[in-house]
Image (spheres, rainbow, N blue to C red):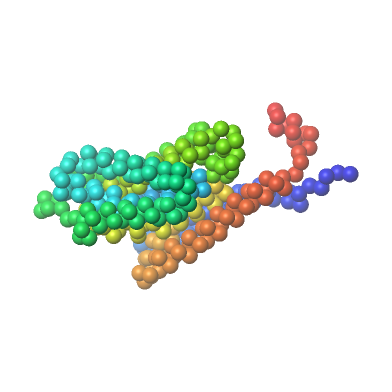
Length: 348
């Protein structure tokens, strides 16, 4: 009696994998094409593309930062508060303390990394759920922001900010805004770390099964702290860029970026490598969101449409991420036994 094989043929499974991995990328192209046909005079222009790349660079960087702890099945809800404090501290050090802008940026980025380590220590050693822990630490950051600014904006003097500092956001390279290249560089670095180095493999094992990680000798606590440290470092970088973009210190601006960051990170886990957070998928997800927001904005949508779009997309992203993870698990469990020919071919 032969063992019954899965009702799905190898071709069907292959098609299903391609749709799951690259469906979001195809949606990106379709959205761009649809808006270009509907708005031919404004949407497919270089000016519009440059504006989208510039405006969405900081949300994209923050989404990549939020993705890192999600790899370990942890969540850093302090990133919005951290972004607000980082950009306010950058302005405080440059404007009010008269620090050189490179030193101020370096201190802010290092400070973000240190706070990320603190988040990891609280989560792992105090054994507090990451949602609760980072919500609490984020509130502390928000309090620090208010204490530093006294609730008021930090405005540069009559001479403004150093041109070299604002150029880190305003400059162009190959005709495109330079922040877009920061996003590409960060995506490449995270892809290398997560997909090609032992660090990434350890983080994925911890995220899929912490008990297994402990049994095989992976120091779980240490690597979760590494993940939060990476998130904090990225938040510090985003804060510096936000200061260069806004050119004032606004104590309440950071929270506006929290929801889009998690939408991009969670939706990204349904693309390229379905079922697990990954840098390329996050980049694709952020691109979809950017095109969608730019398109509905050019159609003259009301101000409340943006938070509605982000909220609905977050719900869809969580649902799709859960479905993709369950699908991957189901495929592993129901994978048909290999024939001797398939086994010998795989071994060769």
